[in-house]
Length: 377
Image 1 (cartoon, rainbow, N blue to C red):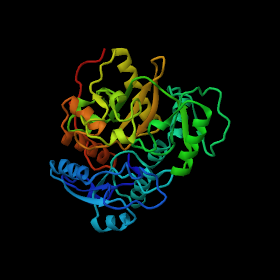
Image 2: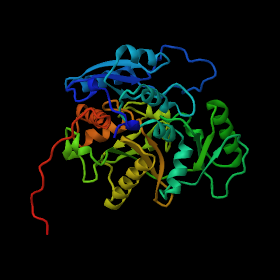
Image 3: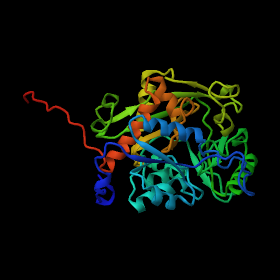
Image 4: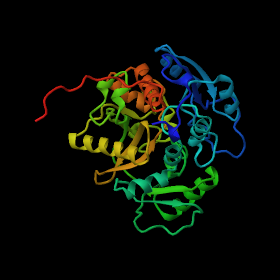
């Protein structure tokens, strides 16, 4: 269904090849960071090599691509380039719903794009709001509390040790060994540090000491009609990627999947261990995949997401957060490692994300399946 019931201009519909704009915020490590920003500011921006990989993958099916930096000049660049569709991995430029900025701009201009829409990207970056939605719909989350000034009374269900992080950041920003606190003084100090450094609330939750997993899902009810690989998708239209286990015990921040750990290459000294498919009992594997899909659906995520889950002290899974703009760096990003473990080529993964998005904007004809001619009893 097209947004707001609008129809796309004929020039965009049913074309075999498209002009695709890849939208991203790029790291510029040669540029000095502005004063007053956190030490890990812009950590979730992408390297230009990721954009180059995306463009190469998209071009394998005949499309042309252009890269547009998702900065304040984006509206003017879009007007000049006039893409048929945008492949969006932009993180945004600040604020409490920055990942929703580019989707909102594209919606205003009526330009098709991939992935989740405005509301979902606004919710998913707000970890506290996401947890409230999940909790109210009976998905398992650890006890949590948001601190906005730092001296709020501690809720009785919170038991030390606790884990403290920014409420509205990604890529492990604001997470290091000091994120684990063991008493009230450490809690107050860390919460105030987060509030003052990141200019946003601190999310405090019971520390989860168990195994950590990330679970990717892709698709929707009619995914088979538009995918180049309909065999990937189950009857409900979703593909569950193999579960990736993150072993932080040997990382630079033991037991903490920090920004410092995430920034290391796979296999590099100090990087976490990545095991995919994770060695799991069938019952736990089924439970993790069920939770991830439900987490995706409850915030109206579209086409692709990756949910992080960790076991508590009793071995029960608890949802941590969901990424509706999962990293797409080949041989590095968690979702790409999951796809690779089951033999899905990077190019095929990227093209399926593209076509799932394009089909929602009326840019693809559905695939025809032969009718079931068997007699009904």
